[in-house]
Length: 139
Length: 180
Image (cartoon, rainbow over all chains, first blue to last red; front, top):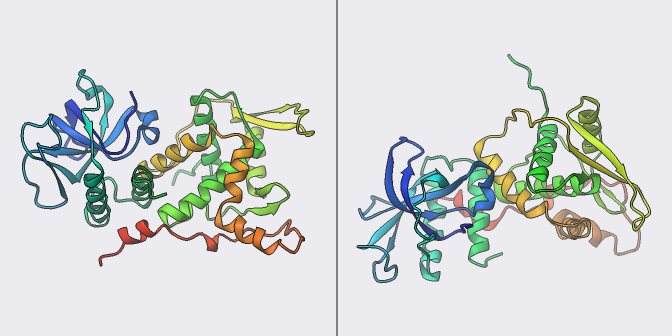
């Protein structure tokens, strides 16, 4: 199974790159697997039910029925997550609709400039933008 | 200080040949190598806003961009035993094809995580392409379009150093760096 920008996955073991903490989480795919396939990981941002302080994209329970409650893709928490932590159930659980992709791209672009995380590198930023534009049909 | 074993261009050649192998291909022709590195240089300027290979020069040749630096580096890596060169007949084209593959396990390279993701992503796109498709992609870049535009009088600019200043940084990348 290959994953693409905007897919929503469920990890039984989602490991945060910065803290090393492991938890079960939904996550949003930020780069297609073509970019990360040699390392066996996927670049994601975590999805939580808590309202983040900033850089959050609301994913409503009405639009994404596999969520128990309204949730948020947190673009300030980008992680390279091992595929071995994926839940065995069918994946992806869903994919962002067009409206949320457009909204998400705007938030993501700003987060790449402001948030200091593993994507704070010109090549990292560039390849994320390239693939989101491709996914949105902007190139 | 420990002296690095390879320069940046040599590291890129080694990485490309490692990914060639991982994509299930036996080798990569010199033509493909030249065009892939040229395209990566263009994409680096366009999407990262910076040059991956600032010391590498390309010139306009009959079949698009080539680089003496890449010729020297591949031959140097062959001489040092890191890569192999095989000369294959290519009757359809009329010239022999010089093909390269890794001769040893990929050594430790110095690309950072962002560079590696960037390179792997574009290599996944470029390695499956044929020579003709790679040539078409190279001709569709801004520097080559600029040269072709100036060749409309029928005189080829063979030997001209390719000017990468015509590569525009992607508008969304610019916005990423803007606080407006």
